[in-house]
Length: 156
Image 1: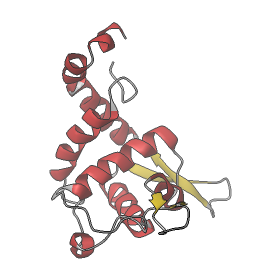
Image 2: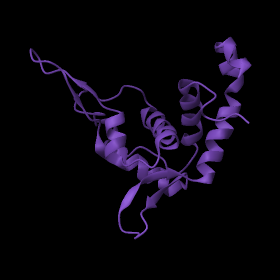
Image 3: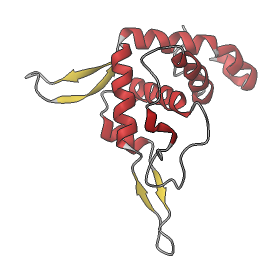
């Protein structure tokens, strides 16, 4: 069975973004057309479907790194901030975007929260079985394109 570890991330995220567009609960908010994706960016994204691409990337990151919270997810999508003459510094991406996407993926049932034994502290989001099934199905569907692009991949 092909998993998300067996295919390149760019092919998986592109295919998964198309699948997430068909879900009703995942949609860009009104402010998404004007929001920057972090303090290190100068302008908002120019792609029309950037929200779905980011949602697919977040779903993949939750699968690889879960349990993971909104703060750590924002750090994953950060970059270096141009500070003029001074040296660049690493800054986080937008926490509001990370939080909103995690909330939408939770409403879809693709991820869920993981709590400690007392049930009071949220340790982060983890993948649900339906989210894992979606990722595996998408990885299986892009496997042929991955083998075509990377011929050495067929040996694995």
